[in-house]
Length: 398
Image 1 (tube, helix red, strand yellow):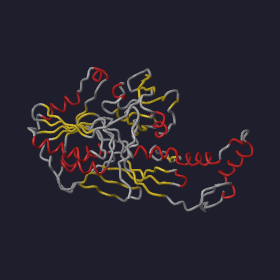
Image 2: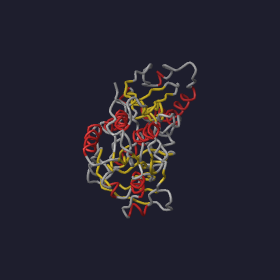
Image 3: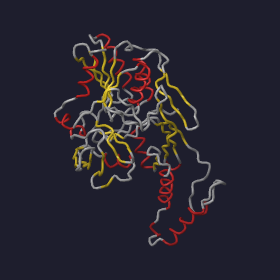
Image 4: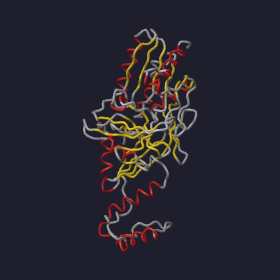
């Protein structure tokens, strides 16, 4: 049975793609792969006319000036890419064998790069979040930055997986990103030295004598154990209130999001609803836990909060009326299934969407804060955090 992640096609340009919402399965093709034009009619559906496709195929082979340089397999891959791209969903992607292998490495936690999560927003390659204490964060990359070029290559029309391959590289080597952000008229070249990226899952400290400030950086395989330890430490501490910081958290494992929601909620509460195209729904509910459910709580989010972090924020808001502070989250709330295809290729296809307990779609909408607080570029330069400052003010009245 495949592991379930909440897809983040984010690719940590570390890059590690915490690809969530994924189901992995082998796909057995009902027809033989086309080996030559001899098999061009094999498996053709009765209701689909492929005549135009084969007309173009034959014209290319008969008329194209460099027809001797045509690579049959690449033409097939190109045709499949075109079909998949016509769906219009940036998260439904065909992966050629090499891309499929690289993607599998990312899922399994291979790291090496600059420490950013990237995704597509309105078909523009966009930074979802820079990871704390990485080359990207130190270079001033911010959530929401648009990546226009990687080195000398334009990102227009580029798939996330291709961008990952360009940003990743050996430790100690240089990569240059040309970026822009809302409010800036000029583009900016950002030079970074690739490094090995290590991501902590959870950290906490005591603020204002009685407030536990929990930072969650990612929902990876270590987060359950780390959060359990954090909760036990908080219970033994002088903390009476909690600020949960999900900013710049790209998400990760769905099961971990559900598990952590259980610390703050009663048993059997809906954390999220998985809704399929045929109307079928699956509900994910909390298990008995509730260790932190009696602590007054405020949640921080921003446009770098995606997927699992959006699910957790939405569950706490809908079930407990928890106050959300910050900016509208990224809006990544869809489930992808990864089908392994012949020749070691694969297809990543969106099969469902995530809803909050009250039935609100996260995808593209994101989670909206109850108290909106923005962070300016000057705030970043001066190491100020008005969002956290506001949360600290508000939690005092709880």
